[in-house]
Every structure is written in C-alpha cells, then in structure tokens.
Image (cartoon, rainbow, N blue to C red):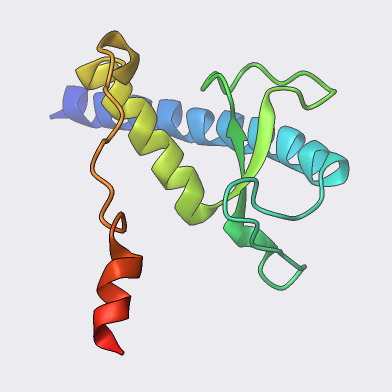
Length: 123
C-alpha cells in the first residue's frame, strides 16, 4: 500500500506544480493584455468594468499559451462565451478539418425577391 500512497503524493505534487505554473503564466500575460487593450470583447463588443472583469479572458490567437510577445500580437480579449466559442471552432477544425477544403457555392435563393409584389396584394 505504501507504493500507492507514494504514487498518489507524487501525482498531487506534480499537479500542484502544474497549477502554479499555469497561474503564474496566466497572471503575467493577463495583466499585460489588460493594460494594452480596452476592456471590450473582441467579438461581441461587450464592455467590461472592474466589477465584471473576471469574465474577460485572454485568447491566444495561435492557440499556443507559451507564445506571449510583449506587444500583445498573439492576444485578443474575449468574453467567456466568445472564448468558449473560439475554442470550440478550433477543436472542430482539428477534429473534422478545415471548411476551406471544399468550395462552398453561394446561396442563390432570395426569399424576398418578390416581396414588393406580395405587399401590394396586402393593401
């Protein structure tokens, strides 16, 4: 049983070190990005104040959390919802491939093509 306890304590130590490393790294680039950019979501334009600032996240454009240039060129501020959506799109692209692989034809149906004529009949 001692070997199970040893493995468990080693795993706990490694996980704690990883959490500490992530927290330090995040604090560094988060603080920098909040100084560089206005507190507005880059996608939905929601504005943030000190009260709700915890809901504004730093997104790494290239998805590499270790790529943190001091000029902020790999960061964009996104609200929690837009950040989740961005990562979902990326995961789907990795899983299913890029949508650029096949050429999509533009839609040709125009539902309002004869709207003016239909409105004349309503008078």
